[in-house]
Image (cartoon, rainbow over all chains, first blue to last red; front, side, top):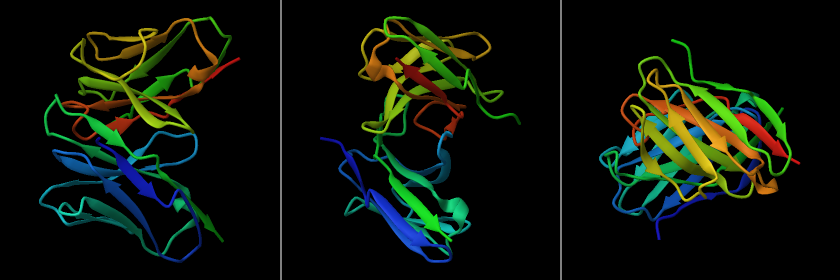
Length: 114
Length: 113
């Protein structure tokens, strides 16, 4: 069964600290993996998209890694800010065509305290 | 470039009523996808429209329907509302399709009482 599991479910960190969010998937075949940031009451915003051949991708203080062999991805946030408080959602697509499907994780709720 | 817009932003309906939500995609985007998001289930795919045709559909009952107009604007309709339909409804637009880069709107918060 194709699934996307995220951990932890929630996380609280202090401003300025680093943190890492995990995403494990069983989706096959694999086309790409995306990380989205969703502020409360808003729509998700794309942070990174990685294909099979990409191991690391950065977007400012956000760095995503992908290990396609173990089917694991992580999102590392450096020097966290209060504005990083949001839900982070991992999404995996199974093929790069209009016949493909997207599989969504339940998200990690990150809270950054001052 | 203007982003994806959704109207209304908030809506309160009574069980048994029907509702229509609207989504205007980014200019030039031909694909519009709809999602339901609840705390218990997370994001769930409803359907995708591309050039006025429904191209993909999720596992939702027939009470959920949609359409897309020639200007790519899309509407989603839910008939015979149930309490469990209370959710944030998101639409996302894309140039080529939902499998590719998508841009989400702010969502419509539907509450069914």
